[in-house]
Image (cartoon, rainbow, N blue to C red):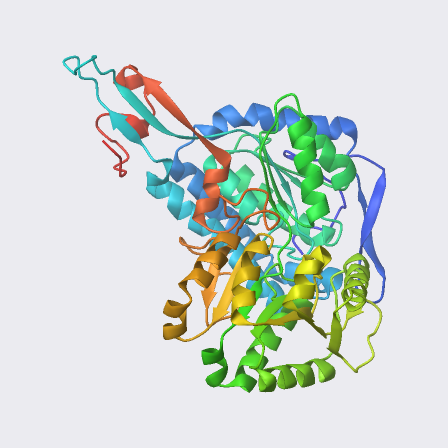
Length: 519
């Protein structure tokens, strides 16, 4: 390890001196506390981080895309340099396997580099130029030019289920820094050591690139205390959050209650419905069941994209159901990320099982150890599903609900679904054409439509959409993954009748950056 873990916040380029313990990393399953103790940032230190972020914004926001891109690339390189430390500590804090931690590190650094490419090229600012025309009728036309500009310091809340890709240097942080916004991160209590390792790497990159102090801070102390204080602070202009619906809506309420309300981009809850039509079953029901079960249990069901709901027409799919039931019955329990998530999963599956009309088809016959979740499979009719809103609540673990009814009933039920991150349709091309209304209904409820595939696995690329209508996210017009995420932290600004030399380079007549513009 480059340096020992200290358990303290990063207040710009200095470390916290608070002595108030807010918790330890905890080894899932065993409950063993890991050293060091983590110390909550004091109110004075939170205020200092806010002041530094506000002071850093003017200088950071006007740096060229090339300069900010180098910072992001160097941050990626610094994170890669400590991947062994990340893997070692991450396995202790999360029980995630080495391959997952290495893969998530690669996804994190790859996303930083993707944003670096975006801002280095520069066209993302959407520069628009309307030149003056004094002879225009019926009125003379003034010179008017516009582009996107960063909105200001952003608060980022780390996710419990992704210690890297949705945490300290994950998509929210990468997109905010790329836009030109300083970031104040609130670390998650489930993986404080990994947060410290990654934060140290980003700070080293910021120092090496002479970024203004305050461009990046990481605070320990939890969302209910430190986090709420940060969101209420007038310096913060937007919030990025990945977590529970309760946590996300609480932040939305706080942000809306400010004298100046600010946007909260929260990814919160999704059960990712899968619709299976007869043509897909005809291709091989057992293979379909195996693919589905693999997606359901991936990561012990602790991805925001695990499929928690299946619509299966009555009179079809008996082999699919039988094989899925057998797989569930012999499926192995898996250690979950922390005790709170495990307890929540156990409670959620019990509530589903006790809902009128729901039948438990299978639950793993293997004994679950401490902190482990068991694969579970439930079934219900369309009518009973629609009669109980609670059946749309996310179980967040390796459990799913099969909903059976006629094709007409299934199509009629889709508009009653809550907003989702994904919706999957297994069918033939002919069925896709014949059920265009079903496809349209799914499009209205989800941010990503999947044909003959499963929702787990989010490809970080230019065209990805990882968002969806509420409650999947707080704002269905946005994505938290991929380059389009940058637009959450910008706003359009127009310059009217300004002299050329006083305009941003992106809007000057000579187009010195050589970017694509609308003119």
